[in-house]
Image 1 (cartoon, one colour):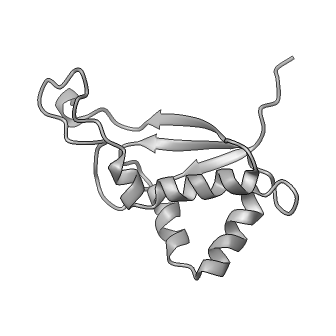
Image 2 (cartoon, rainbow, N blue to C red):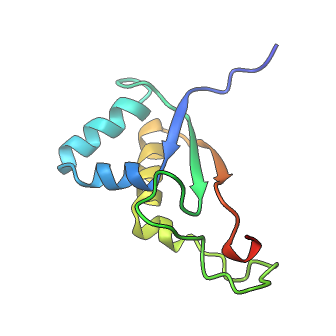
Length: 114
């Protein structure tokens, strides 16, 4: 037997962008429909891409990586804040009433590894 972890979806740049284009009341309605355990589906799991992915509006990485930055000193999640991904994740957790289980999924290696 495998334990049941729950249901969820992906927090992507395109979903944050699309959600952000809606009026505030519609944003709340959509988020509640997915994450509210009483009035919605009760999603409790989320996947977030590390750097840009197929659902991004442009190509970007998690910071400013210099050639050979093996310690990832240039790593930053600031892009997730400015693109609305982190605010969307915080809203989802608030509606769920508990922290979400998250999977950070690498989509592509940093440019210096290609």
